[in-house]
Amino acid sequence: MTILKELACAKINLSIDVLGIRPDGYHEVEMVMQSVDLCDELYFSARADGKILLLCESPVTGDPEDNLVMLAARLLQNRYDVNEGADIRLLKKIPVRAGLGGGSSDAAATLRGLNSLWDIGLTPDVLEHLAAELGSDVPYCIRGGTAFASGRGEKVRPLPSFGDWELLLIKPAFGLSTPEVYGEFDRREQRARFASRIIEDHLRSKDSGGTSFSILHTLFHNDLQAVSCAMRPEVGQLILDLENRGAVALMSGSGPTVMGFFSSAEERDIACAEYLGTGYQCHLVQTIL
Ligand code: C5P
Image 1 (cartoon, rainbow, N blue to C red):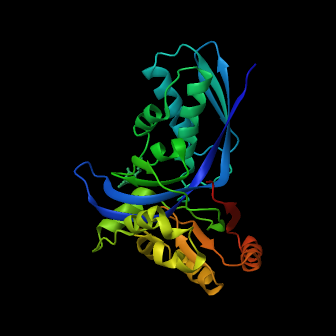
Image 2: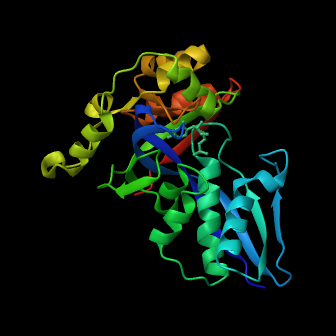
């Protein structure tokens, strides 16, 4: 029996600009996204009876049927009249409700994996369109890498590479709900900073010659960070603590995970070791080019 493996990598946001609320209730955003090598693993094998079964050691949703993996598999099967089914095993490594896009990446990996397993032959462009039906960040996760996302997040264009970085991802013990963070964002007065366009210009400029540590703090920005810090002050504490250790620190997505970029491996490893004892999860990860 053929078992097909797909990696679903976490994403970080180098920037999030929230430009306003749309008539459909979503927010118009601009974001620079980047994949990192903290990945869930998915294994697919075909079933002749047409059933789709998901096995996940630590279920992410109360009902496995609500898992984005199942929704992605059913979407593909129904849309393309596929008679075969699949057994899917999901090994979670990416923390949930963390701002790291784990669920979105699992959904994208399912579309890629089943497109191959069932031999449907869809191109990445078509998979991206389909992915938008599953969630705002799913289209980006089809290809990953460094990319600019706009609209509600579903319009994706690739960017020149942000480069090869090792960074810490620190995830407090609690999670945050994206709709709640956006809801709180709407209660506050905001002014758009367009940080994502500045990063895009930087990455596209011919003389950028890579991105140096010393300018990271001028590039990174997340409009949701102040909101999440107000909802959970521990996030702000974490950012301050990382900055006091010499890091450039920014919350990813709607949080609560904070990423820390360090100028030296020594500072980074000391910080990681100390966080491991605090009940927070600490992952040393690398950007994926
Ligand atoms: O698209 P997705 O299902 O991942 O979005 C989850 C929730 O996050 C939405 O229901 C909405 O409340 C919020 N959201 C938003 N604007 C976006 C993306 C997500 O308000 N651009």
